Amino acid sequence: MQSPFLSVIVPVYNDNARLAILLDSLDRQTYPGDRFEIIVVDNGSAEDVRQVTRQHDKVILLYERDIQSSYAARNKAIGQARGKILVFTD
Image (cartoon, rainbow, N blue to C red; front, side):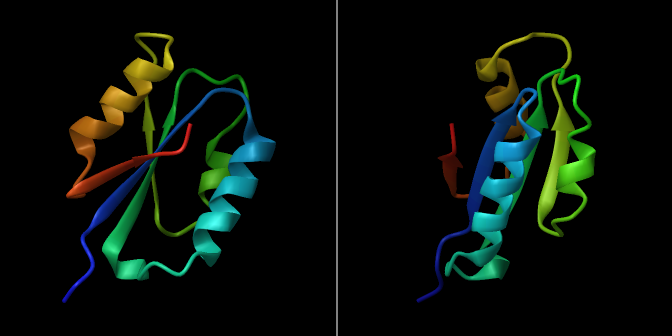
C-alpha cells in the first residue's frame, strides 16, 4: 500500500534561523520523499526567506503580502496544496 501524499505547510515571518532548522529536519525524516511536498509561505518578512528555501529541493515558496496573519499564509498554501493530508508546522 502506498503512503498518502502530504502537503507540509509552513507559514513564516522573519524567522530564517528556525526555518532553516525545520527544513533541515524535514530533509532528514523517514517518510518517502516522493510522497510529500513542502510549501513555505512568506508572510511579508523583512528577511530574505528565499535565501533559506533555495537550499532545499522540495520547497515550494509562496508569498502572502496582502494580509498579515498566519491564517492568511496557511490559506494561501492550502489553495496550492496537492496533498491528501495537510500538515501544519506552526
